[in-house]
Length: 119
Image 1 (cartoon, helix red, strand yellow):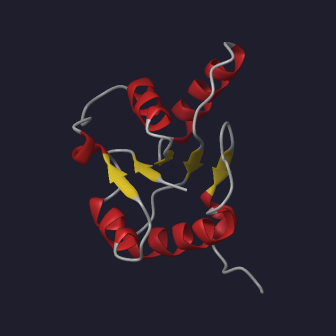
Image 2 (image 1 turned 90 degrees about the vertical axis):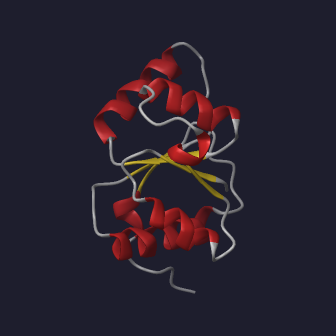
């Protein structure tokens, strides 16, 4: 799973995940600051990256619009805003659970990954 962070996600999260070997890209790195939500989702999909965002409402609407018109996206991870250490921990749990899955057209709620996987 490759990740793409919406511009409201602190870039430090991408740095910390990258240091752990997770392929991450930020809107700043992609040159997409200030672009529309649809542009962000289009970019993430073209790059086969799951988009991580706090903008839950707008991206849910956009995902529904894409589904109605038979357009696929590479996946969404939706979250409420939280401190960087919490966000990092939740994303690591989510990644551990889904790293080998195709998340095309899937929407994951990061709140479901607050606890580590039990092995």
